[in-house]
Figure 1 (cartoon, rainbow, N blue to C red):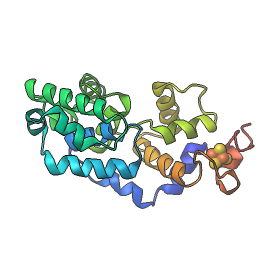
Figure 2: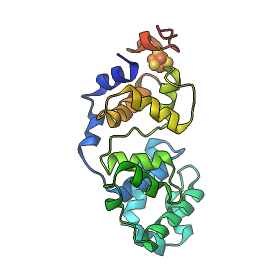
Figure 3: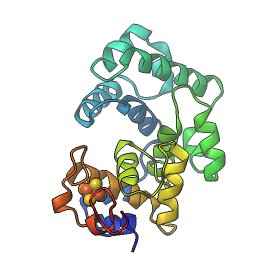
Figure 4: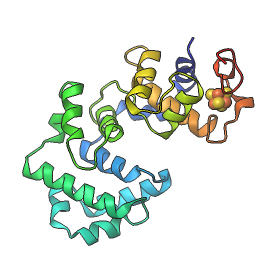
Length: 214
Ligand code: SF4
């Protein structure tokens, strides 16, 4: 068995998988993921709550002053830049009449292209929206996924698409979203920035931990 599938198995029954049982609102996922860039989870939660207490949708955001949006986002990394991105993103959504709920129901490549065209939206943000709002079977590449895939020696590249391809090739269809969540939890608990290799169940398969693939 490859190490990614082993990690998926380890977390198959973890409560984190419950996120896949519900469809989240695409606008909320989009904004929360933009806020989350270079920002700790606890800060992302707090700032996102503040944002959605003030704004219900893109129409509210474009009526607000940039300074107010910046003040709401204060605490998140790059908050001034994120305020500009979010405002520009909302302006595009409103002016072009983009219905995000309809977009995420499109075939994955078509939906991804539309999302990537929005200001402030990169591959990870687009893929998080496709997974949690659209229910597409896709593994967004975040800091945990990139670190673990590199340590496991699955790909000799840090490029977003290369890392994602390596995960997608390592798991059967239908398990890619699970792989994303399992790798995140594994990255929080075991393969942290300071890895706990001595307690790692996939160590025999990990070159960094001194396993057989090394
Ligand atoms: S053996 Fe160490 S580096 Fe390899 S996956 Fe486990 S914790 Fe990470």
